[in-house]
Length: 441
Image (cartoon, rainbow, N blue to C red; front, side, top):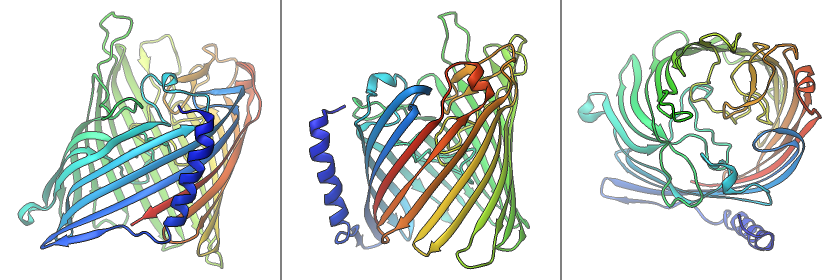
């Protein structure tokens, strides 16, 4: 990380420069015969304040500030509106915080010096067959990103993949079959590397011409990392699932359901886990378009830490930082029961306000409280601490100043429950942020 003096001089200057210039600069798009070249960029600046917890864990004694900067520049080549080559550079930095690259031995979520985030070759609908491919470094997301998402809120972005994908698009189905490894982020790597001793295979299908939206998938995850040098293989996991959305009253009432079942082996234990989410969305047909959503999320937990079964759901490759499980990112879809109420309203065409209430419980009292990285924050193997984790209230306001500039601000407060109070220090945790995103299309 850089010195404080440098932070205070350079970062505000860059921020003001981009804010001013965005009104006058547009992305370049050039055409050569049938080839179209498009250059686009995005600057995102965000300040965050943590009180009562930090980036890595819940800690009532911790307080931190972050000034995050991320620049992405993309270059795409297309022919007849069919993109065939895409390159995206990323440069992300973190200032003010006490965390350094050494605090994140596996992957740094806040800092990534200039790097190639995406670089892939694509050819779709080869000779009108519906068959195509995409190969190279790429982002992959599906549905509402609860099962597969890039985790774009994080400063470096959680999931980008070195992958080879076979695509098929017909009247009845969109299908992606791919194999790959996700990237890790380190500040000193000129080109970030994919995670070692790991592979995943995914088949994801979107079914068409049904009276409702339906996606189905299969994912195989093999993690060969060894523990304690004893040669044990870590994880062989099969995930099956679906996501559906049904329009009950057109444009006003929808219901959605997501489900995934997992089996396989983990440390020679048999895996038997599941995750589900059910929601109902009601849009009120009056001025300002208020909308109310009620959700229930359940990620299975391990009911007995001493048997030969592993029952904790691992979330597949879901977006973990786009307002699922509360804004503070204290929880994840593992050994979790969550009751959620969401409300949003549009005071104007350029402004939208969101509010969210979350009530959290452990699914199984003897299993742990898991972070977004699937690490255990706390655990009571006796189960005597109960299951009530706490509640969280969050709000955010999004303002579109123009087509290029968006400002977002908000925050949240978490009130710890009896489980947290009985397993260690406990106090209210607070989080606040303000963010400016400048997009040049």
